[in-house]
Length: 331
Image (cartoon, rainbow, N blue to C red; front, side, top):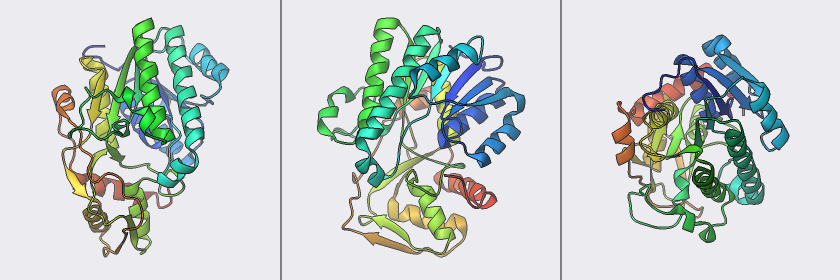
């Protein structure tokens, strides 16, 4: 799909009412694509927002991707032809949720990916994009982590069902490409944030959790001493990068992130500043803080894209505006 023009194409997006999936829907519709948005959980606020933005270019359909027959029916009956699939749906959660639901996460995510890849082959879809994760680099290695690293050796070293599901999803993609010549792109994003992310429930990421606590006048709790550093990519910039990966077709595995690294303690201060509220932070050194640093090799991404991802400060201001306009985002 070199130098693709999305106008006139029919694109399926899974997890269409979810955080990242909704940004794919918005961007693809804006570029003139007809979007079939599959979702499992309804989010009325996000549904209304996307409907207003996309109009008749969007068709939202509730489908259980864990059900092979439902998934196949979506491919067979929702459009005469599907040109591309962007697979964003996944069972995820915070660290505690992942520990307590590891088997469930692994089972569901691998099954849905397998069903989508089988349907893409059966219905002759030109391009599939799997939203993977930088967490596939779960075995200590050289930094920055490069796409050349063989993450297939990692499953024996982790009990994290979410990480395993992303690794096995990539293995499935690789085997489908090898045996059936299905073109499957794999995006490995860093920490993603932005509008429409949930601020409540087990799926809460660090930034919306911080926004919710700071906006309510509560202390922001940080596990560890807050010195661990992370980089963050705005969801809209992630989507622009992903589309460019498919359009150029040069690389099938691409890290997507930002070179801007920030300690989690400083992140909390930036969130408070974006909200224009006092910074109240409490660290808990006794809780697991994860790796001290996560850094991605972004050489391929920079080669493919023709724009610069926004700064964390600008992205936080955009995210806070959305949060304030939608005071209680749906989980």
